[in-house]
Length: 182
Image (cartoon, rainbow, N blue to C red; front, side):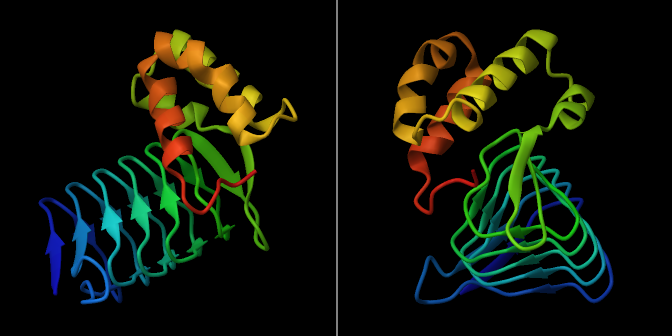
């Protein structure tokens, strides 16, 4: 089993990172340019992208995947086998028990709930106002329309064809095995 840590990661004091297990892929991987603050725990068989931020005490159970640019606030807890999409934001003390789609903000201590798209983070990374509008529209379809995820996917299809980032959002929804936070 292995632990692979990429380049230019800042890993602070008292962080624990477990290598993979023979029951899974045998690999825990941390990409490049991540900031992992004090007392973070990354369990076995986790896959971490690039340029993520894990604030103090954030904890991943086993088999969690975290996309590029994701931010986990202090003391965020992530249940095993969850996937956190690129550019998502988990507020301080969030308890994440389902997948978090790309671009979405979640928060909540007992069970995290969605709170819109990560507008500020996306602006800082240079996302255009047109892309932000499209992602807001996708958010409304999934989270405010009263549709099931399957029904929302049908509604999202034209928007996904016109916008690459909405297509990434749709791809994540289709691939979710635990279901998404709603």
